[in-house]
Image (cartoon, rainbow over all chains, first blue to last red; front, side, top):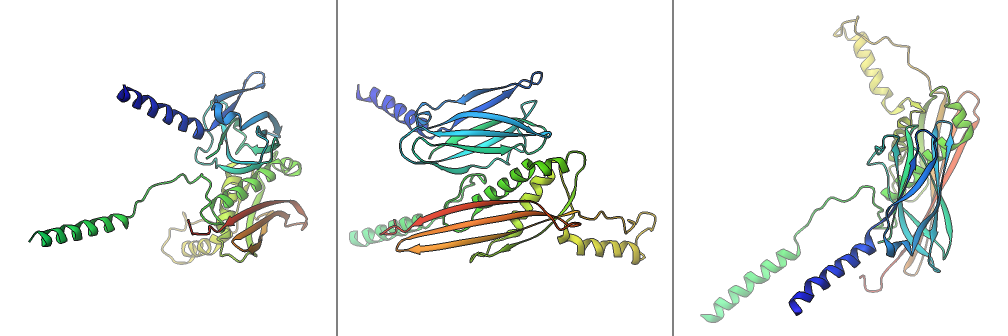
Length: 135
Length: 200
């Protein structure tokens, strides 16, 4: 009985650890015909989602280049430091400059909503994917 | 006899253990990950500064207007390092220049390679070794219209086991014809470090 329990405990423990470290990811999906953007969750880490999240994503055009404004929200009542990364995609869904997106540290006070912005690397960038993680 | 064997075995085990402790392990890391090994200027600071400067510049309305129908020619002057640290500021401007060129909005003349270009042109024109029909004609280089330059300063404070460093990077785009500063931006970074009591 004990031998059966051990793998179950180990599996639960590893799932628990993964849940803590896996980043949350949200991505915009722009319709090429209408230009309208939808936001969808790529990875929904339920534990991390209670701590940090994206309140809204706004996309504006600066000439032929797009700028994304992402409102990040601290879901807890005390200050938290975490990291985020914004990746840009072209209309075909291909990542632009795959090694160019860097993790950036950010600190939010309790229940604070802070807006971060990212400008597309070039005019081909239409959609963004934001990753958020906490080590 | 037994004692000697035991002593030999103990010595071998100790040597093996000690050499095991001093072995070095090497692994590749993520170059885009945040680096917080010390509070000194690091790769994350460089990446944050370059990203902020390029984003701000590309989003500034007069710059958008300026780059709407043409690609202005820029050159990068040096960044004045006013901090106490030795920082390779050319690495910051290189990253900014790379991002701006890849945006498709600007072109650059590289003043660091002017000497090498002059040498090569002189070799083509004057050495008698190069077929004149294939030699590059001089006097056709395009002049820069704008200059990029800036400052990097820091304020460091230490108290007891705590230390705090504040970096401020200022960057500006200046019109060479009029002397007007067309755009400027700042990036501030604060880093804190605390020394552990027992060095753990």
